[in-house]
Amino acid sequence: MMNQIILGLSTGATYSLVAIGLVMMYKVSGVMNFAYANMGMFVTYLIWWLATSFGMNLYVSIAIGIIFAAAMGVVVERYGLRPIRHLSHASMLIVTFGILMILEGLAMQIWGTDYKAFPELITGSPYVFRGDFGIFVLRRQDILIFSILIAVSIALLIFTRYTKFGIAVRAVSENEEIAGYMGINVGSVLAFSWGFGASMAAVVGIVAAPKVFVSPTMLTYYQIQGFTAAVLGGFETFTGAVFGGLILGVIEKLVGNYISEGFKATISLVIIIIVLIFFPKGLFGRNVRGRA
Amino acid sequence: MAENSSKKIISKDVEIKNLQVWYGPVHAVKGIDLSIKAGSITTILGANGAGKSTTLKALAGGVKYTGSISVGGEAIDTLPVHKRVESGIVLCPEGRGIFYSMTVKENLLAGAYRTKKVDYSSVLDIFPVLKDRVNQIAGTLSGGEQQMLAIARALMSNPSYLLLDEPSLGLAPVIIQKIAEVIKTINGSGITVVLVEQNTSLALSIANYAYVFENGKVALHGKPSELLKSDAIREKYLGGVAK
Image (tube, rainbow over all chains, first blue to last red; front, side, top):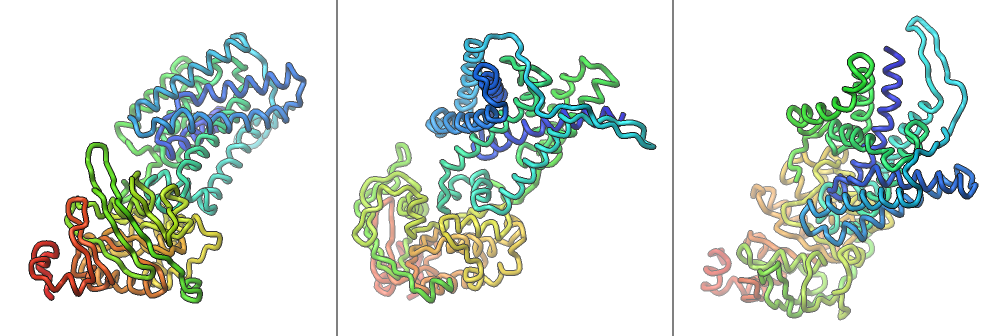
């Protein structure tokens, strides 16, 4: 049971990372990014390509990949979404669908459809703990994922509470027009949110790739789970995204283990429906008086 | 404001010429000329839909317009809204528009986005009621406190021009009186104030000059004392305010 929970938390931490990126983009720009998974997928391919075909150091490839992801996010927001912001919300969703398909098509054209192996960033035998509670195993990759999640969460907390730009991000997400009147350059905040979100997608690709291999559909399932995690968390707060992901990971693992592996994917959709009916603001949604 | 009071704000005259604003097919502002004297309190009065708020928004750079706006003879028409804040023009919008989910302090920090040095204390000196509430979530403040916060937040940008859009809206008379005093204090530090109001008596009691808008145009303008002299004008535009 303990091991199942740890495995669940590890997978859940990846969902949390997906959700953090989705929530950042959604909070600021109001757009649910359907191309999120494919942005991560495309960048993971790029990193794999740089490392294998060009013999580049893996960490250098990852750094280039994350910078590329951020640039891609900024470009998509600036030139794909901002020109149509005054139109309906649906038009922006369609643009993200278009990008989803473009990236998938490009990846297939450039790299084909066969699965490519991607190395774990830290290797070595897992840590085994024995005690009154029994035995539990902690893989090094799990520690890496937890560390990334903790680091990203702390960084976000400091950024959104104590930095001017972080406050500007929250201001724009609450009231774009007023934020503009305060002297905040709304465009740069929008671009940042997509740059950040796309970088998170790349990070998710990097940590998920050793498990799911690199392929054009490698992160599709993660997008659905990340979306569920964000819904669980109320789609508004990063805390909600983090805990939403962790809770979903554990539920999914327990369901897979004790009920049926096949039921695992269905459970997230059931959770979305239940949460939206009974907790429309999510489990961590805030009720703020006067919220526009 | 400590900085402001020690170093008197230097503002210049603002000239608005033939200002026109369209909202889709609606011609909201139909060629307005306005002069705002440096260091004054200029008020814009008129009924709903007269184009008062739109004029303020145009001055702050928040809506597209034709015509020209110049500060000290220099046109600012090409400056986007955040650049206008940088050049000292800040709008305190109608309906307060504070960031409800953020604390008082975070709201103030958002207001100071364009300034290099963030100075809470001098602004909080003008609004003692906010001093004890800096860590309170803004959405939980009372209406009057929220309005104070909205003005305080605008002041955090160290403006030379403060554009106030209906600061008295929905507030109790005693609070409105406090707001009026605050506006006078702010103006006393050298900040030019443009005040859009439906509360005519409040506006005329503190303004140096008044414009009355009607249907997107300037219907009349003059010193408050002059405007109040005419019975017909008082009846028609000023809701029968006593002389």
